[in-house]
Image (tube, rainbow, N blue to C red; front, top):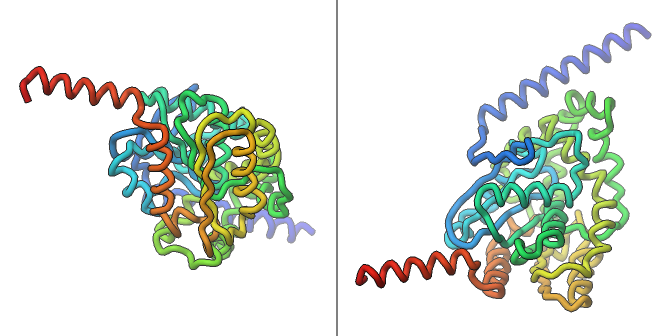
Length: 335
């Protein structure tokens, strides 16, 4: 008995040392490359590229803002938009205090204040996977700020999720804390190839996605955020779906027909019908033979959807004013 306990304790200690070493190493090799903004005492990290109308990108569960760089979206979009991609609370290099229940609504409020803090007065908002719920929440909360939504592979209705009980375990107080500093990251690293295969199926895992360092996603803090959001999926979707009749911004919805993570018929297709049923603007784009990671499979289709929203809502007032001022200055100088 005592021998077993001692061996178990030694195994946990060894796991802890490995996890701490791997986490420190991956952070040294991948330091923050963006900017920081502090809101309500919470420090958020974000990437910013380009100029023009503001486009905000919100990543899904398990990854971080760099996902949009790896997919190639940020490079393409920064040619004509001011693209801002946040590490959502608890991911990448953003903080996630345990004193707050980080529902989509809570995250939307925080990110809206963060955007105001860096001088943004309106934006098109894109979300992928779990990030679509934060994007929807922002569209519901501040429709005068959100000019339109682009939703990729989203989970919008409270459907059965058999993966939640296992995925949520690292968020359990005390037991989960021990797990995510010892066993959970090591097990997750072994399962990483299978998880990636599942997300991209039926396509092969993109070579661009392989640039993502697994241990950045498997650090204890990010595992807690991922687990907490897995536990929140169903109640969050339940809350948001009840308010869809209040949505007043145009929406572009994109989903892969072969998505094995979130079934398009139960979510993207249903959302499109519900939004149209409430008399609002929605367009649905189903990508044949594509899985959950649509922004890797067809980034150009995502760009087309964003451009469609931008064309529909026109130039932001601030940009029109800047252009008018520039023309006036040019006229005064005789140019």
